[in-house]
Length: 256
Ligand code: NAP
Image (tube, rainbow, N blue to C red; front, side, top):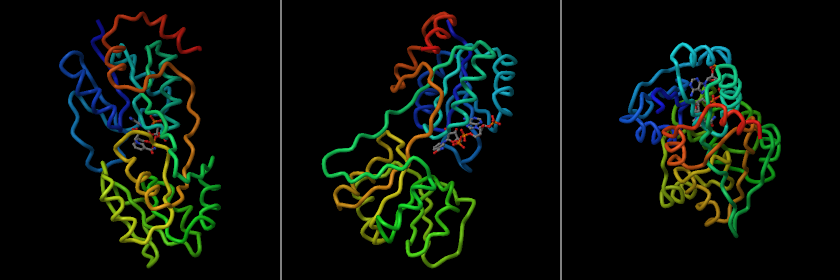
């Protein structure tokens, strides 16, 4: 049976997976180290980059990791690619846990943008006060906008914090509920929501709030990540880790 598992984390799925596995196998969760006070995790936690796919492959070999689970956020494009590359080099079976994208419902007014540049360029035509929920990264691109006030919600202060009367920073960690989201939109006079297509329930209330108030949503598309053996549910990842699937079978699966 599998004994040593590495989870590439930074998400609620990774935390739940570590919790379900911790008393059955040796679990290490890897965090990038972006969040100042990450939620506590069962099992061992290591923090910081590996030094690319090569570094991760070396880590897998040196720590005799038997299975690798990439449970990073759908927008962690580089890590998603490095995991595939490193798993192939180290011949470590890999599974990705990825939340399905959100699905629009009647009444939703979602405008999808393939790139952040396109989203920023299109924003002035959608509203004059945007709630930015992109995790704090990439804020600089919005700073050149004229005539669009910004309310930025992030867990940690974004790198590009700017003292400007038309920019408000809210430091808060989800989950968020509908009443709170409706109150925020009203109190700040928000008329457009900017979001990633993160999926999952923890941050979806903002979409319901936007629908309720008839506001447009500017949605940044998910980045491309290499195709790999994937599941949406943490329970399926638990089964995969605990199964005696042979590595060869996983590698075959990955090629599909
Ligand atoms: P990224 O752009 O794909 O990764 C950039 C670099 O950060 C990677 O090349 C890797 O460095 C390091 N890294 C990323 N995830 C790591 C992990 N779990 N453990 C160790 N090193 C990691 O990733 P990102 O978008 O900056 O996300 C960083 C972390 O935040 C991830 O754990 C992700 O799950 C979490 N997160 C991201 C978002 C988002 O919207 N992007 C949202 C919520 C949570 P090396 O090449 O040196 O190994």
